[in-house]
Length: 302
Length: 283
Image (cartoon, rainbow over the protein chains, first blue to last red):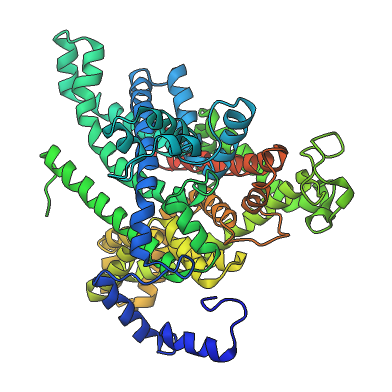
């Protein structure tokens, strides 16, 4: 693999020593960990580049996609959950419940293809693949500041590129939005129903506060805590989902890098991606717990 | 026992969503077991027909044919059989690892409990799909390895669940009485703690069928799970990605099958939980 398909036995032997494969497994692990701590995450077998450098290069594109998806998901999911809780058992409630359960059960890679088929090809509303059009990129090159095309083109006032980048993000972004949408709807509905039973809500209603204000101000504020946890959880989930859908959209992000690494058995890259995503997952969960503890004085950290 | 089941069925009847879910699960199980007799072209799991490539859906081929001329309807039905097998094996494997470990940790506590729980913490710090991917990528792509990988990512949940049950049960008076009467630890475990802490784990396990099917389909889509010519739904979509823009039926029906199967198991699971614990949230 490392030496190419026509390597001689002698070359393979040398590669074994070079890659440290002649050492016992625990020793290999020890070496990996000590280098890992010093910021040397190994060299990708496919790209022949340091894994850490590759990750830094591909991560922003994925972050952009995930943030877009989560924004859409929460912006639709939270109101849907409120509506659902406001009139439980009615039409809106049933519809949003079915919608929420479906959102969590959808195979994202299949949904991505359906979007491409219907919205991309048949209706020609959105581009099928890529982050920006090649032509747009040549005429209006995006200066790389954060690596997020939408942010970078906005900062530099490059509106032609901004429009094109937004155009390209819609299909993969919508695909990723489904899961947070379903989960947010469900969580907001459940916690809202709980909060709406509290005494202070009854007091607010009795003192003549309008129902919309009761829902969106009094109740929602106390129902948002769990949504934060969902946010952290879905971010980790979305990161893994990019593995499945980025290659479909030829989106040059972490997911496509990971999918390629998996297919070509590129262990250093697979390990790097896995550890990076796991780190994100743990840190975000911890962050959500801490913020929730700050917001809700009833929770005490032990 | 029968009286309780009957009452549960009565309660379920009031929730049409649950009834639909149970019905769909029943259809899924029926298709899976009777696949060779229901599928119009059972030999199409492996036989190719070069002349019949890319036929759109028709009365002869309800879901059309794929890039090798195989009947997609038959392959989707056989896919149900494979998904059922995956779900059963993975859940059973995860239970076999998780239940004894959780039981021991919860019943005896102490240092052993501490170690086992830190190990589960380690597993739980990865998103399950990611862990399954990493493990099956390491083991090499095959359906068997994918099932092992998913089970390895899954067992800590069961260990945790049964541990918390065991923790509360070991404080009950009847366990105390048994211990005072000089019961051996084996009798304590199998006779008193295990039977009384199993119920929530069984419910959880049956609910997990949907997630396991979705996870294995995702692995197959990445090329890590089932290998051709297995009629696995995720794999069918993976192969279809090269053709779907011109032949929509190739991916549409396997995907619908995944969605329906996962959805019906999830709905049934929610309903089951609601019936067994009426105080739980209603969905």
